[in-house]
Picture 1: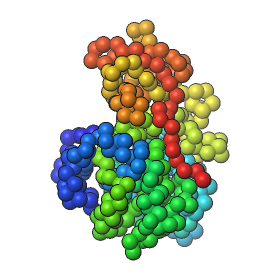
Picture 2 (picture 1 turned 120 degrees about the horizontal axis):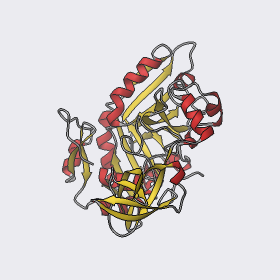
Picture 3 (picture 1 turned 180 degrees about the vertical axis):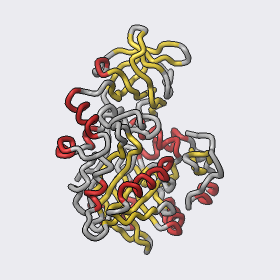
Picture 4 (picture 1 turned 90 degrees about the vertical axis):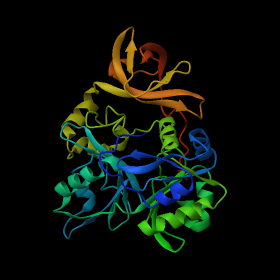
Length: 373
């Protein structure tokens, strides 16, 4: 989860709180971020799965799009993404991707309609490039407001609804992938019932100066503990969710990444987004490779970059791998040739020069627990 910083590290509004809580801070996407707290990743993972965890995701990029007179922000955004944005009703949220002319993924993002504007959440490492991309494509049709200073808290786990309802009772009725403006401790926040852990939960967008006090209020409840990036990664891996820069990037298309579900039927047919012709061709004919889940035998963990082989022939590469605490075993995901991608296919993962038997399996590894009403 750590990386070499390219320059001075930035800090989120919760930096001082992380230090108070004894977090181990590491460079991540240009920020000093908590990878874990004193309890450790395994305890934090179980805390989120079984109760409730609070994550600082304020390093992510928040952007507001508002249509200029005579324009439609959703239709404008559809020129950059393959998702059905025009079909979003007020309060609905959608997952999509910025694509390039080759159909590759520049970033993945969440888009929510508030009724009078669109709220975007993009990845931290990509947010400056994403903002430039949005400005280049949409400045004529939209007012673009980068809200990079805002706080973003992810309250995740089966007891998240119990906790947040004490502050704002209306959040209990929200369904997965919906959003609303909510008053929390006298502060107007934008809350979505979403997250990237596979658990039920919420993401809470706050003004910068409200992030710390709201986080402290949430942590004061016995069900809630602070959770770092380490457990966030193991949770999203168990949930079979892509991590940008690892499982998806400019060399992978939404079809290869098995993200076709995020492209509406009309958009598949009509195109109108960068790389549409390539994506449509892969939909019709199949992509050359496919993202798959992998269950290795034994305790060996196949990390990113490990080769996937069949009978000594390399057929793919692992893009994410680690220990799945909920299952008590190693899991991985990666890309293999489409002809070798069927569930049940026996493969070998090359770990430290030694072949480890593994099997291609369906994802998610752990069933999603989203609240759909």
